[in-house]
Length: 68
Image 1 (cartoon, rainbow, N blue to C red):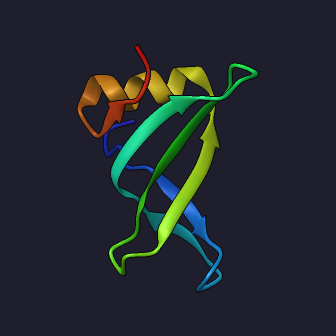
Image 2 (image 1 turned 90 degrees about the horizontal axis):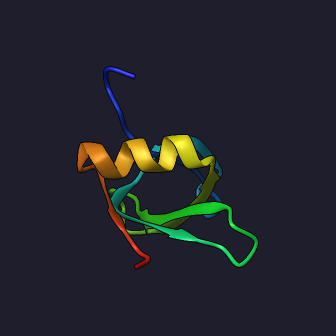
């Protein structure tokens, strides 16, 4: 993973692979990891990911950790 970036599906514009900005990664009640942020156009984006990816994004400084 040389070029790390979080991507998601934009429901409003129906685009796949939209880059997420200002991402915050949280844990769901069942223990999954979820990233929430905004696109360059200002639409809200949400995507689920595995724990390995989530921790890699936090460690690289691409996303903030949203749990204690």
